[in-house]
Length: 477
Ligand code: GLU
Image (cartoon, rainbow, N blue to C red; front, side, top):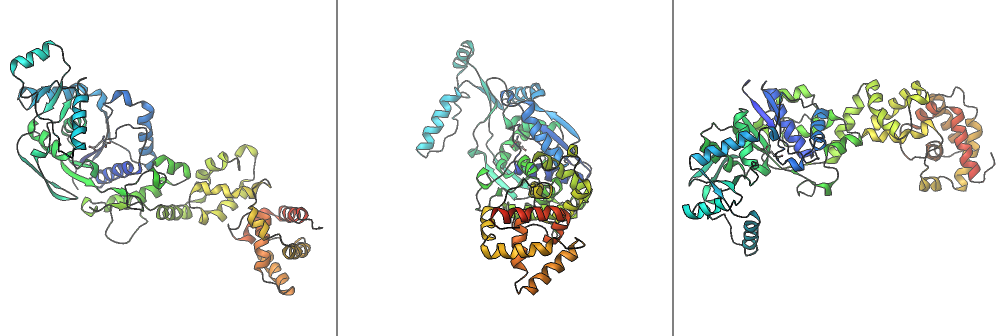
């Protein structure tokens, strides 16, 4: 246990919570909880124009939904003075300088060089201004940014996931730390905050690994203690390219809306890049907290496998307390206008339906397949009906209906036995009745056991539906 562990999730409010960011948040949270440390939320909203409370809330709601509670909360937009003070410190010690260049002009130069495949770095032209030139620019009131002067050194650090990483500072340009409008850039604000918030471990996506040497140079310039760094592997789609919308849903909230359970997503994301060292896959939150270690996080990229996630979700649904499952399914049932408490629909029936459906739901939204239990207004699968409405089948079903009307008691066992007896007597296979019967009473090909389904539907409903199909097909009933 290391009670001094302080980690953070530092989202930029983009109005979107990518599953990759959710995993970063989760690993930080697990690391904090494992070590009895603190998990800090820091909203990186320095780009005030581009962030709104709604955009921030998407991320906060996602974290709450996953159960990732935080111990402290900060907003960079409320700390702008602090970053300016730190930039001043570097100006005072000569480790930073004013740059009067037009950012658009510089961008043009950069693009030109890129086209010619030339490596382009800011050439320190403003550092090399003579006092007179500088004075003139100041007099002219030219807007100025602050650039950090990269010292001539080699940056080395030990990444907790990727091992030793080194970078020659010659490859790093004097980057801007304060823009013309005095807003801090990401690297400055990040270092100032990580130091000020006493962050012990920076655990973030590998996309940021190229920022780390820059940040280390800033720590050294400020003479501040450095945190440990751990860069999490990328999440790829099945085609091994970076996970993006092309691969399907990438926003955490889309998964919520499809009826993935937060506990299943939690479990799945925990294993997306980390493994406890055995083959155990379904683990409770507490077990994951207990077993979570950074040294078991993979350096190689992880592949997001939606089928695996669906499988896991299904495992969680299957064992969920049934009352709880009813509660969680309710928004999906009401949205589809299948079941609402105000309709005074039968609660006992709902319970039996949920019992039948529980082992078959990959996602809660699959519950919409139960419409046929509550009403005759459901969609028949046309192809399926064609297949089961041939003359031969209709004749069999019409005969069978006469037996069906008299089945007593109308329960699973008797329904099953009487169907098989009828099939034997008429030397036909049981499935020659089972498949059309299922199509007639449910409109679907699959689903829970037919006899269990019919027992819940009740005799009258089943007869009504069989008669309807026969009549529609011109059969006398
Ligand atoms: N705001 C950055 C992001 O969302 C944070 C990176 C970091 O964790 O340092 O990617």
